[in-house]
Length: 174
Ligand code: ZN
Image 1 (tube, rainbow, N blue to C red):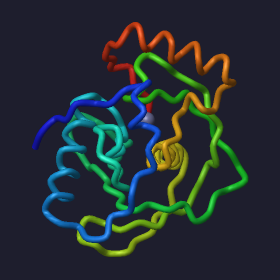
Image 2 (cartoon, helix red, strand yellow):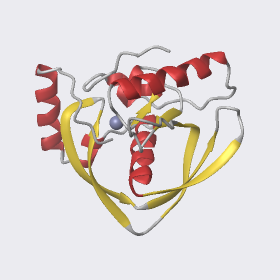
Image 3 (cartoon, rainbow, N blue to C red):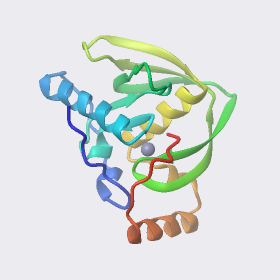
Image 4 (cartoon, rainbow, N blue to C red):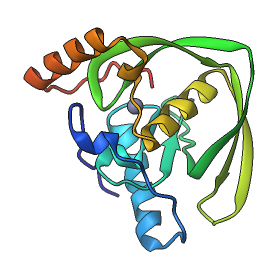
């Protein structure tokens, strides 16, 4: 397993639309392992392949990151099928946008259809933190970032600041 280099704002790769996976080959399996390793290394609770520069619709998550048991989830070609009207709010950070936290309101629960690592079609009802996290990661697959929830002025300020100071952080929420 390899810790991959993270792509950060304002790299335009992050704006790419990721492509669906047609066949899960050894390449994809290795990529998934590397994504999990990279996510844990940077203390994130979710990571999309595009964040290491690979535009494929693969995301990994682990919202219960206690030290003892690691239980990473992997979603291939995830699609949100249903969302609740009820919302929940979190202060979201992003491994691709260092030192930036933005309060975002998203549907509290959602139903996600995806393919697992064995190539089987699955669905999962996600709530609270998992719901927020999976929506955040699926946004990445569509080239959307948390700063897009802000006004253009605020967004430009953040990008300007990050262009000058590119540093890593471990204060990560999502
Ligand atoms: Zn992110």
